[in-house]
Length: 186
Image (cartoon, rainbow, N blue to C red; front, top):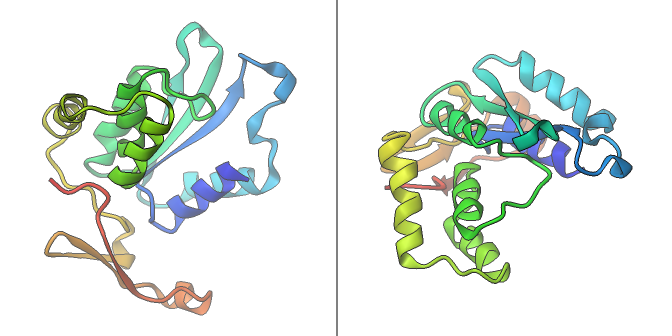
């Protein structure tokens, strides 16, 4: 259900990038991850939605395939291309503090949560490592500040914060306007 939850957040504009494992070749006994009917339906919806693009990410050695869906705007397009460039996979844990920090931030998780996850893995992210990742994220791959919610009908950016306006359909489903800060603001 994790994949379906991430796709739901993406479809609602709460994430600018989502990783979906399409093929698991490193442990075939676990089955193939995309056979969840809800995840399949949501992936189909995402791929047919306006403003969504995708790129494939092949694991080193060809033992896995991940679909990277992203809001077709900056910085998400540059970040998705970077994730694909090193074979990022949805169902594997990054092997170093650097990649854990980089991937977590590019996926839009709050810095505090990513730092906590990295520290819990036994490799705390030093200030130097955080600066190195920041340089990659902001200087090499994009100078744009991410804006979530990225759906044009559902967001407005004011003073570095994202204001959720909500569409009538979302409000009928119980969503209400709220203010959240962007995941990463320079």
